[in-house]
Amino acid sequence: MKAAHLLKDELEYELSIRSIKSNRDSNEKRKILARLLDKERDVPNKLVNMNAYPFNFENEKTGIETTLQSIKELIEDFVGTETDPLFLRLKSRLIHVSSRINRMPLIASEPSDAQQAAVWKEQVEFQKESFATSLVLEADLYEKLSSQAAPVSRSTHAGETIPKPVPHVTTYEKISKWNVKFDGDPKKLYSFLELVTELAKSRKTSDDALFSSAVEFFTGDAFVWFRSVQSNLRDWDSLVLQLKKDFLPKDIDEEIWEQIKNRKQQKKEKVTIFIATMENLFSRLSRVPHETTRVKHIRQNLHVEYYKQLALQAIETVAQLKDLAKRLEDSSLYLSNEKPTNKDHFCFSCTSDEKNNSANFKAKGKSRNNFTKNYQRESPNSRQGRQYANTGGNITCWNCNLANHTYQHCTQKRKLFCYRCGKAGIKSNNCNCAKNE
Image 1 (cartoon, rainbow, N blue to C red):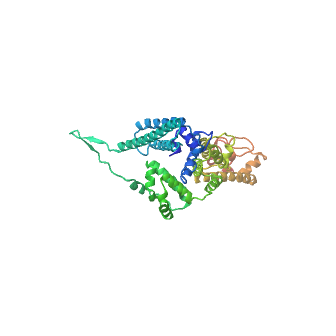
Image 2: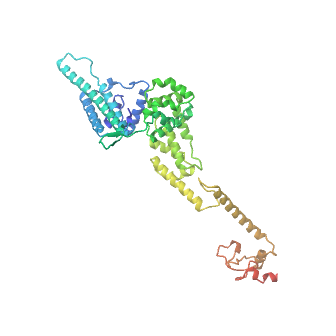
Image 3: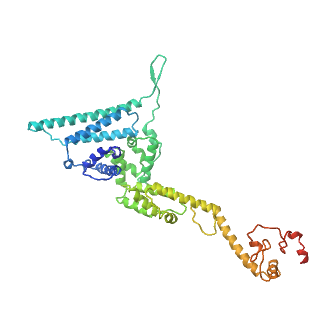
């Protein structure tokens, strides 16, 4: 039975018999029930105490009849296979309702009082008939699977039908080709389980198929372990639970939280990759934290430049945080490509060519400053020195005729003039200043 497959009233019943009362939403209640079911797999019904449950026959009767009728209507319209979500939901709900029927706390023998005996017979009769109905519904569900598995037929000229040949590919043959192995290293366990889950989802492989071919996944110490516990396992979920119990340290949650706190975004690391890595770490905890908690830790572990710019933003979801951080990343990349500066700038994806351009830009600025200093130290016999001396110490630009700078530093559009004497409208090759010298 999967907690995620139960409806709201069914979920409330399962929590009530386990003495859990909460005002949380249905999603969090499903998480709570899922954890309780995981613990019960070690010791069945350990947390179920029907003596503490406020049993009322009429309420039980109404709840059971409603669930059976709902399941019946869904089965009538069902078309699919064992991997279909609707089949898995119906399967979990049938387990729930049959368990609820069997848990009805009826006395074992008929009371001596005639009135009480009549009530007792009514309740016993309802229990028997309801349980029989649940079994019939379960049979109907699996019969539907059988009919859907039958190959499509084609008609012959004589009106007969001949089934189309269907190639038989066993679960073993498919899973054995995945080449996914676990050797017993605790550090690789989560990666192994995540890969198997993703492959099973992609290739539409059911949990029953995974469990029946589980031996294909183990090698080395893990294979020895699997042989020793195989007889005590019932399904894939119990196998995963036992794997975590036997191979992971007891304080694994503390270690994961330590990784989460210490995982900082690197300077060149894409923000989407960083957030995905953090979400993956959160998913490995025995209980996934609320989204606001995840946002808090992801946000404070972002690169300092992102953290500063997002400080005044109200962010409630991981998707919102990812979107804002991605915008900052894109803008940073744009600025680094379009507007180079001689100062260090924040850039996550600068290429080696861009870094060289930045270095050349700095070198060019340094060279220009040195040229200015050398110009001021030139002797009066040099061209620039003569220009400086002939103007009585006041520099005039030969290009724009403005004071206090030379043509080498002029920002105006370059005009035609002699570079030796400054005469306008003539090139140095044609100027007589060289002959005069």
